[in-house]
Amino acid sequence: MGEGILIGVAAAVGTPVYVYDAEKIRTQYAALRGALAGVPHRLHYSVKANANLAVLKLLRGLGAGADIVSGGELARALRAGFQGGDLVFSGVGKTERELEAALNAGVGLINLESHGEFQVLRRLARGRPAPVSVGLRINPDVTTETHPYTRTGQAGMKFGVPLDQVLPLARCVAAERDLVLTSVGMHLGSQIADGAPYRAGAERLASLVAELRAAGLDSLTSVDVGGGLGISYGRGEGLDPTVFAAAVTPLARATGLPLLIEPGRFLVGNAGYLLTRVLYHKRSGGREFLITDAGMNDLLRPSLYQAYHEIVVLAAAVGGVEAAAAADGGVADVVGPNCESGDFLALDRRLDGAGPGALLAVLGAGAYGFGMSFHYNSRPRSAEVLVDGGRYAVIREREGADDLMRGETVTPAWRDA
Ligand code: LLP
Image (tube, rainbow, N blue to C red; front, side, top):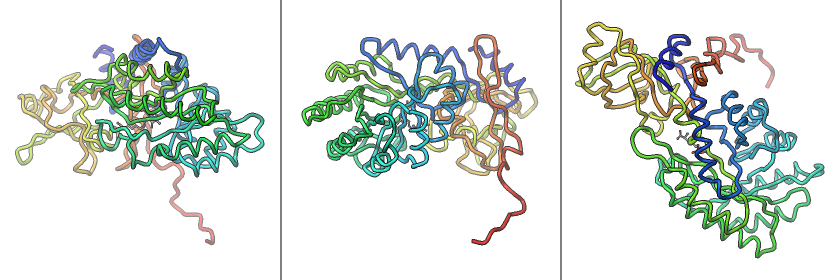
């Protein structure tokens, strides 16, 4: 997408604004499907990466199913036009109400993560017209070299069924008339940049499938290898989809089962830009600061994971002394307007020309950007825009003060407790 379009959108819609490039999403989708073309597979887009309805509809139009983790994501997926059967329900803490909504919607696969969850589902499934399709998300005990907060496949984490508990739980599921065990799977973590963990996890899954079959449990119709494919944020490499494919396709061949994949970031991450304007330039204690109108409330990743996002200057400062000072080639911290010292988008970054008034684009903001934004300091959430070719559309209006206070009351309606 050209810089001119981004500048035009910022002028028309204001900042901060998230802008998504439809064509980039299509390209990523095609690259991943192409890499896996040698084996039967189904792609379920992980809604949490970017849950905007228009983005969901775009991916559905390409043929994707969806991977959901909450009742809210279920509602979004249905609103975007997905059928229940197109959905995989993952997540470590599904409530009874969410599971019931999933059953009512005819969700295609429910990935269980614990024995307790199995007991709840078994009760809810009783007497349903058709058996409920159940998967077991296992914890394969595979380490990934990603931020500790985005690792999930290691023993001792809250995610997945520990390896030694899988067979007993599978037997429990198989013994239920209203449940059918159709899948086993994993999700190793997120922003994974090499194939080795996938290969290790896939090998675990292959031996597990063999073990289940040897135990007479032969109802599987897919194996789920999760998501997690890393992308480049302007520093470091992403995961080449052909490397991912080479790591996981042996699993399909060994088991004769179609693969299920749940990518999020890979499809939408580099399709997104967060546009923000520099408000002020400041020098303090030998450091330079560019204070922007977007902050951790819009894009939490830098503050939460010390994540690096490349930033480019789209339109230089509107002039003045301050602008010249910031443009002299030094490094600056790009910081948000919130009352938190940990509120930053980038540290020690060289951004020539980025004085007050400059328009910046934070790259790699299409995944876990808007979806993790919040209302701290009572800042309304930003608008979202989809660009397709030479056209753009606002796909989420910028919030206002009413959105911040929805559901609140100045005068409590007291009741006896
Ligand atoms: N499947 C399951 C069960 C997941 O929990 C996730 C992500 C995915 C698929 C998709 O992962 P992806 O392909 O997008 O890596 N907020 C963090 C990422 C958290 C990911 C949580 N689970 C970040 O900003 O890096």
